[in-house]
Length: 262
Image 1 (cartoon, rainbow, N blue to C red):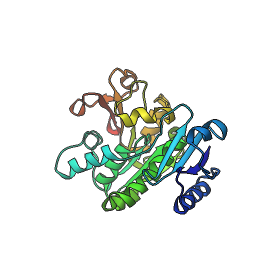
Image 2 (cartoon, one colour; image 1 turned 135 degrees about the horizontal axis):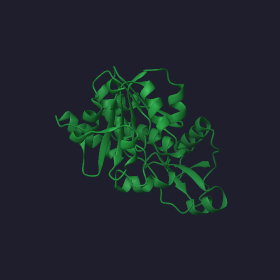
Image 3 (cartoon, rainbow, N blue to C red; image 1 turned 120 degrees about the vertical axis):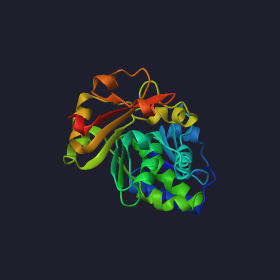
Image 4 (cartoon, rainbow, N blue to C red; image 1 turned 90 degrees about the vertical axis):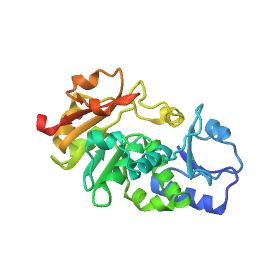
């Protein structure tokens, strides 16, 4: 894996790429007017590209450009501000001041909505196993806050992204240390069918929920464990989750285990 700049590199982009290279401990390579295709074939099959259009893009050999933009999350937040309900908020019974552990960051839509709801007095911790995806989301959020929507910067600065395996992280958490533990695994049948989801598929983790995930999540959660899943996934019921009928949507549903049930 390497970090480079856009084809039309500038001093500003070079400085940013070198800073990112140092912070991520990923080698920097000068672009030198080489195409992405050339770099993928002759230098490294995994490339981060710092640019002015999106902040950061990622390429793998034979795949489309991958980048991040929080379109869906910001749309959902605007709906909440206008008094509309959000299925995550109601399924998790999220309130201001709560602590929320998002075990599957993905494109950060749920993480951002949760950050908005819990506010500055609450806390959201977001885990992402895929290194490229965790970097793209973190850098993409900062680019968005700086260049497109500075009014969202305070909320975006609250986002805490950790590149780690969620089960490993849960095992290190103290008992009842967060209010809600939340999962949205990338199942074989994706919950969402957006273009953004399709693009990130090559770099996401395809782990699935196990009994150990549930046991550890129940130990760590004070109030409830919630999972979002696509229809046809019968494993959720077998793992002890109650289907939240009130918050079922066209393409997905929520499973909930209340600590009071245990």
